[in-house]
Length: 102
Image (cartoon, rainbow, N blue to C red; front, top):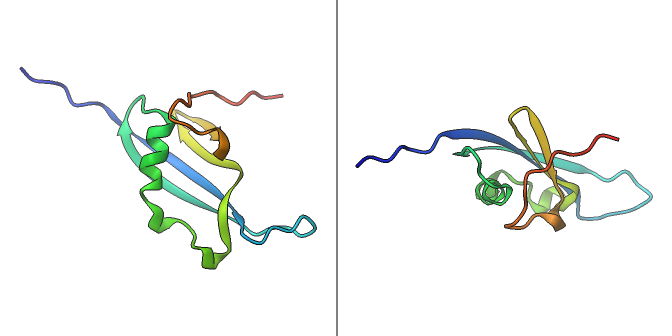
């Protein structure tokens, strides 16, 4: 008996960072890190986050004044759509939801 290999696709993940020394009165330095990961079609946002996070060597270091995710968090580009996940809302139960346009 043979089993078919899962069909893989590439997910483009962009992590958005904010400076460690936050000052409301000054434009804050920010950075972004783009990571390309390959996973089966239909991977969950959590699966993609875990795989992308394994590329920590590409993340800015604290020496670059990057402290944590900014309010926009993580953007995943797949199937010609951008999906935005805020850091506080990304969990193993996160679902794919297109942002609403107002």
